Length: 47
Length: 190
Image 1 (cartoon, each protein chain N blue to C red):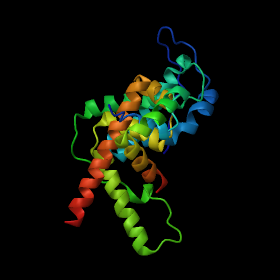
Image 2: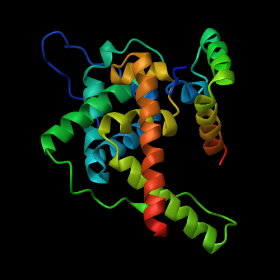
Image 3: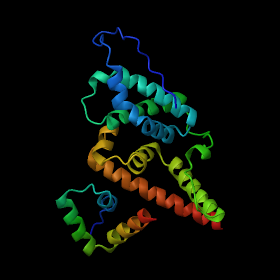
Image 4: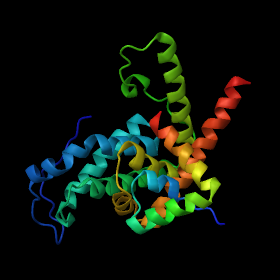
């Protein structure tokens, strides 16, 4: 599975359209690397 | 910062009318701090940033008739960005950074213990150093997004980049920032 390294930040920035959001959410369910990247970025934002 | 706009009529061909100063001020002056902030992070110098902003506002004023409406921030920051890059090329210097003006940029820290203040200051210093060490093409999009809270579309407008490029450049900027911060923290505890 190919990682999507540009998307976790864009997802958190709320810059993805509906189709991209759904696709990325589905992707995170299957890709631990992207899910971790998203969680890590999200944690940093809440600090 | 103090801004001086010339009200002198430009007699150049095709621009022989005076843009309404009041309208210009009303639309552009609210973005003065953003303009300074972006210029400061690109030039990495307080004095240069002031000069860049002064020059950028004069340019913006001169070409105000090409402004097509909206809140003006992306339009103005595009000029500030271009002016900053021209400035950098003119100065032809990448080294010799001036020390950051801590007093002017640090926020109030009411209620925090001295240890917390010191730790926060250290963290801020570390992040600042890492941002300043980023290549300018990463630094500018990061500042526009994280400090100026601009949308990807507005960043694209200000930088001339496609939305997909803004997205990937931001992702790479954040990754580099994270790597730099991690490295410096490790160096500090060694």
